[in-house]
Length: 518
View: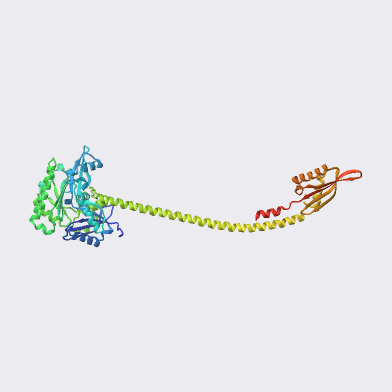
């Protein structure tokens, strides 16, 4: 697809002429970049018009621009009707209900658009109604699409001419040219402040379009198809001049009949895309009985690029440029429903495509973040594992040092020695009735106590005292137990020979700490 330039191309297509006005969007007016025309004799039926348009589009690179097409007035129906409402939505409904009164086609076969021209007192409105058969409009759409072009809007020359005239400002009080000499056409002083009425005659190959204005307000329209191309040589033809004068007089007479008040057309302006409008105005003036002139210079409308127009006055195309830039006084567009539906489908596809891309981007970002988080977690796990190994090695070193310190402390610490344990053992022995005759101390294994007692109860009391001391003060005594008692007689008195075993715990604290670290 070609890259869009941002410019606007206005096309008018006929069997004898293809015109193109290229403009740059501007906030001040119309900036003309180029004006081109291609003349010939073509026909839609044999495909020659299609070939000519395709070549023209390729030559002028129309695919790069936003394309607008102007339909000539004689191919559509246009009416100015008064409706009892100012609400455009209500007016649209009224127009569609009464469409068959204006054209001999059912409403479903028509492409219709309307525009409020003037809001009147009493809640009424003057409305321009344009009706085109669907086949006519869709025929232009097919013609453009076969040439590789997609039209943005389908416009009507009537609305474009009205918008151009409103933008030029030539229909204000100074509409009558200063060279006027016919005193019968001078407006009375009492009416100097009233809007002037003027007629615009626009000549284009294959037709004539006549618009009547009151100030900047469009009051009547008429379009006629004919075989003239209005080239300069035709000015010498009495038949061409007579035909043009007859159409102008007929349009003015019809307009006077439509209005209840007596009206006076004060001037007649002539414009043309293909001919010298000044020469045609001079030829028409004696036949029409009105002061005629070409449309004055359009400096207020064309702000740049006037030199590209040379002697042409493409008013309809300039008015279409106003429509394309949303500055139209009379906005009318005949886009068929098929094009609107296609645009809606295309817009939906674009939205769906963008949504899919957005969802895809979100998923990619989510998966990226997920895998990044997984990678960070794995890296952190490896880091923790390395730190664990390092700490475990340090812990084993600390445990080894702890065992060494425990061994040294056992060598220097007097706690738990045989003397200390013997002292504790003597403390818990009964104060009477029991003698200790032998104490056997084996380091790290236990103590064996042997002696004599007057009775067995003293032995049991001694063993219980050792166990109680083991629970409270001396842990080594916790497992003390009597392992033997034997009765004897000494000096004619009975005594009990006993043996008490006090085994020490087998696992010391340093060994327990090492087991916990590992």
